[in-house]
Amino acid sequence: MKVAIASGKGGTGKTTVATNLAWVAAQSGCTVSYVDCDVEEPNGHLFLKPQVISARSIGRLHPQVDAGKCNQCGLCGDICQYSAIVCVGKKVLVYPELCHSCGGCTLVCPAGAITEISRVIGKLETGLAGPIHFAHGVLNIGEAMCTPLIHQLKTEVASEGLSIIDSPPGTSCPVIESVRDTDLVLLVTEPTPFGLNDLKLAVEMVRALKLPLAVVINRADIGDTETKEYCRNEGVSILVEIPDNRRVAEAYSGGVLASESVPEFRRSIEALYARLFESNWKTSPTLAHGAAQ
Image (cartoon, rainbow, N blue to C red; front, side):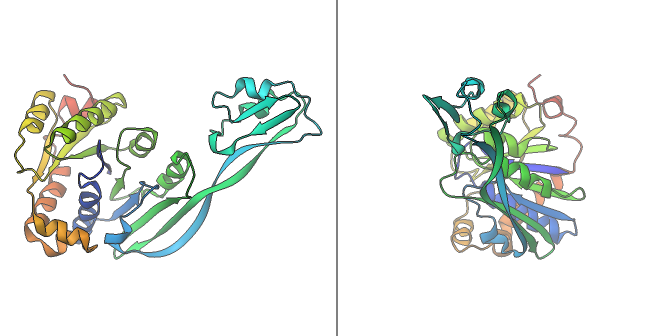
């Protein structure tokens, strides 16, 4: 089972849920892989403390122009929708950071002046956190696009057991790449006006992708009831409500898994783990088809 842990906004407790769910599942004897796809700011390793076994650089293709062959026809600039390559006078300028590696410019060049070369955009590290198979990506500072790195990172998702994909926050392209082809998108939210607003955006995104979804409400007892009302009206299952607990914040601040030190929190995560494999929510039309009925 591949579960993507996502959130419409940052700070809802997404990584807290993801790392503790991985730990609880592993403690129960399940084969677990944890993949941190928040490559711009990965922090799952701070809690799981893996031993890195292998690391490799990840590159992305971009065009290189042979000025001796170029006839300045401008076709490369015409086909590029991102202005990553433009013909200005008798020069062809390339902006690698804008390139989406589609290869269109190489196909339309009549003089064969354009080839593709690889440029390193980040690194991918894998290892073990106890029994948990661990992988994360680290995007180089200044890189504009992280989806190629996330795409490579998802090849580390195990084919057996429970795979937990810790997605970036928000609803943009990196999140879509992270949750694509998963069995369930678990949206972590908080019962605040901002949390509800961004939860609605995230639900719309997941439904547009036609993926199963469910919700975890973190800090569930801080007063707002509109989040539960929204989920009820939309037919979205709430798998667990996690109470607000200062000791969880203290554990997080110290880089400690809250499930190891806060029994009440561990029970909430154990309940979440148990519900992942129940059939009653998975047979819901909303979850099965990713659209409200």
